[in-house]
Length: 254
Ligand SMILES: NC(=O)c1ccc[n+]([C@@H]2O[C@H](COP(=O)([O-])OP(=O)(O)OC[C@H]3O[C@@H](n4cnc5c(N)ncnc54)[C@H](OP(=O)(O)O)[C@@H]3O)[C@@H](O)[C@H]2O)c1
Image 1 (tube, rainbow, N blue to C red):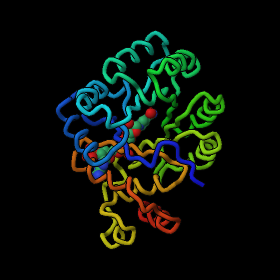
Image 2 (cartoon, rainbow, N blue to C red):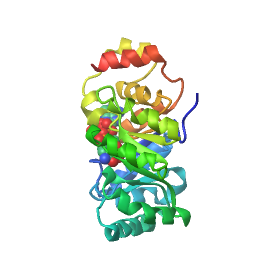
Image 3 (cartoon, rainbow, N blue to C red):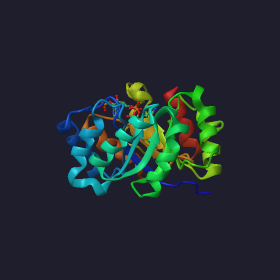
């Protein structure tokens, strides 16, 4: 059964990468868009990344969806974060409540912005499995259309309840930390194993492992390296892994 809502798509994460350096952002974003990325993900938390991303996207805004976040418990500050995002991006395709902060308080005004057409979809994010029960409560309101959470061979807690729930409710899934914040790619398996998987690189295998779960729509690996952005793009191309290839990736990552 095909359950995807947005993908399969490779997107660009921006935590801990170019921050406020617009030149570095432009090099990475150009490489990513040239390679076919369909989405960028940011947040007011990411030390200037939204502003540098906006500068990098200026000439190419229609080539990628912007997923960003509201990250504050204050509704007034939330409005201010959104006002800046509209100035930078014109429109926010996916507006997410970052780490569920103040999600009940933000929902009504975010829905009003969506009704006015300045937001495409509303989503929630959290990085910690301890918050997954609350993520489920938020999803069950029926008021969110996207969910962002961690998934990689070392972090699979979402497979138990949240991925089935997202599939049941028709909610698109965006995967953060697909490379384990870089920890999973420090050592690559031998070339022969990558050949068995039909991939060029180990990061590509890990990204494809996540995208090959039909409940997953988008993976958002972060990088400050244009060559890495290009290499990661290959994961967005079929063929997808079957059970055998997925088990092999899990074994190689163990
Ligand atoms: N609560 C939340 O909402 C939340 C929390 C966490 C993350 N996120 C989002 O998810 C995104 C991804 O998660 P993440 O940044 O924590 O971790 P990640 O994407 O799993 O890993 C990023 C690391 O992988 C390295 N990398 C990327 N491509 C590579 C390649 N081809 N070869 C070798 N190394 C490579 C990067 O280093 P180089 O720069 O050297 O390539 C970077 O150190 C974030 O940027 C953010 O947008 C959201």
